[in-house]
Length: 324
Image 1 (cartoon, rainbow, N blue to C red):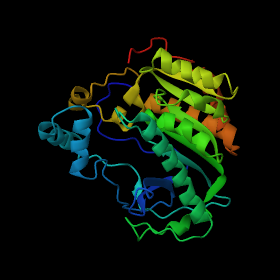
Image 2 (tube, rainbow, N blue to C red):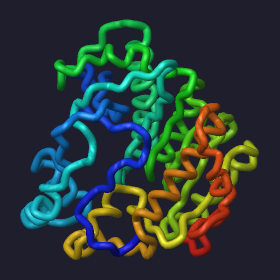
Image 3 (cartoon, rainbow, N blue to C red):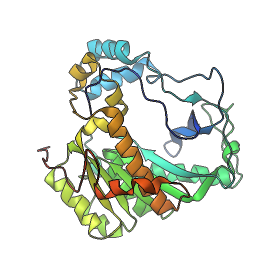
């Protein structure tokens, strides 16, 4: 998305404040490590977490982009180290009768060589995240070893486990699709510019739940689109749309951290304004979730986006496919 020079993430537009806390359960590979976002009560002077919480993250990003950590990490830390996420760190949970729907999000992974192992591991982690909320709902103690002062039991009646979806970007998008196979409680999936290559052909007949594919204009390949269409041919509720003027990183925080330094390091260059792109993605996602989670909201006013109707959005595949 666009070339606006901004070093700030946009605040949420919904009716609730947003709280945030890191959750770690256990110390083994069978444990969990996730960041929880939830509706919270407004709080004056609330702490906002840093986008890059530790210097090691800057080193990791430099290595991911094949830049020397020796010079890339300091530059990244200078560029992004002061950025904060517009949420309330460990803000008080805002209760609601009947609870809130739950969306489990799977992030991207970058280039990996052990594809089959990684995609199944991540999908299993999505299922384990759901098990955590089921345990909390059932009243079982779930200690958060990272932040024991944040008592997860406050969520006991706060999540509606009959309304659960899974979502992801890139590698996370294809793991969201696989998670539908592994866990029937996931009623639908939203895949943002999904990297479809790792999904084995034998699994396609097992994907019975609807999927919303939201693609960038300049990332997908003919092979990847063919895999999406194979799924849509099996479920009339599966949708494929493309956001024009967007690139693969347009669906990430980087779309809003687009100073000259960032563009040079990360080679980004979408033409669509990032705020407009975010609105399209958010509204299409909300319309899809309302339809398949039976939400009592007014998100159906954006259902036209699910058919690729609207400004900067088209149905089906991008008009120009990548050679990745």
